[in-house]
Length: 76
Image (tube, rainbow, N blue to C red; front, side, top):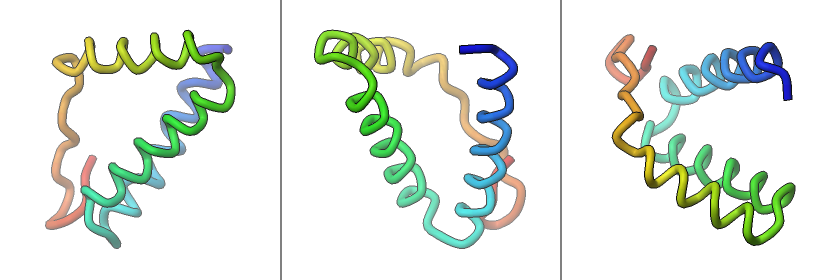
């Protein structure tokens, strides 16, 4: 996995997320994105790796920062 690919995917998903948050409840968007990410992990990782990545996400919860509000419903 190349850093360039990660950055490009991050930017693309970020733009789509902002658009979705303008049109839908941001909590619904977050729930869908979280489930989709977990489904991808479940598909490509074995059970042990899946459990580890979920534990890693929970362990790093204090390192996640909120999006900046762009409009009444959108975010940056």
